[in-house]
Image (cartoon, rainbow, N blue to C red; front, side, top):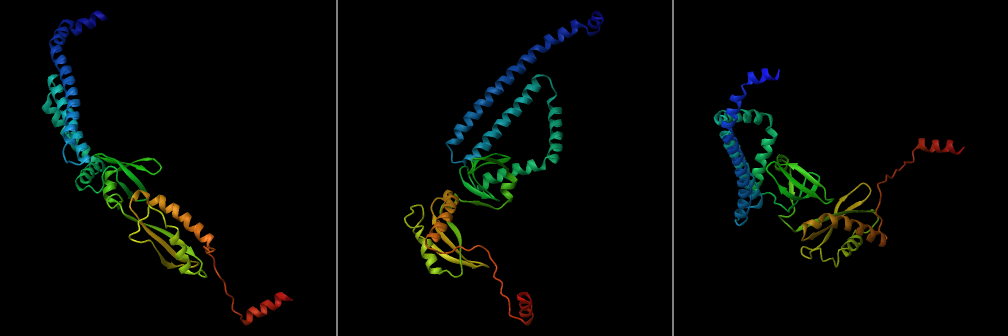
Length: 287
């Protein structure tokens, strides 16, 4: 059976073809190694050159990635041509495949375009503290398709760039000075001026709080069960907004307790009119 296979396969012809093909195979391997080394060199050289320019870091990263992918693609074409593959047909096939892929991955393309928009418009940069939706985090890295964030709890969050562009976002780093608001409710029987004095004393001597603009306490609204006040003060470093909000919420509660000023809980007062029916009902109950 083996002899029949060897006769049918024409081992001599296969050996001749293999020997003839060997230079092309070795050439392809050398080309692959060359482009691999070129890929490493171009990556390092591009990073070094771009770091000395005024181009934003985010744009530098995107350019380096684009150059790497270009070298990688050219290397594949060169190796395929060395192996005798019809490069023209392959490129045409890749073009058709790319067209079909583009229809199937519209979200990915939208994210890539959004990434380019972010790099051009620069609504935020690496290291900025931002708020998007209910998420407060620091920008760690801006990639072509996604943006990596780090929360106060040191959680890494990866957000598609399309979402970063479309949703309402607050960049605290662009305007470092920011106002902190502490809502506090007091009972209607309490003196508003006295409560204001107590709350303003809580911020005295804190170097983290700016003296200009001055801190203030306003009557925000008249609620169902409380007079709703709001302590407002300005800080220089926006990263302290949440920590100071939590800290002064506790300080305000302790200060009002120490001053004997009541912080009410929601309650309902019920008044009964003295009607004839109510008096008759009360009389029956008393019998």
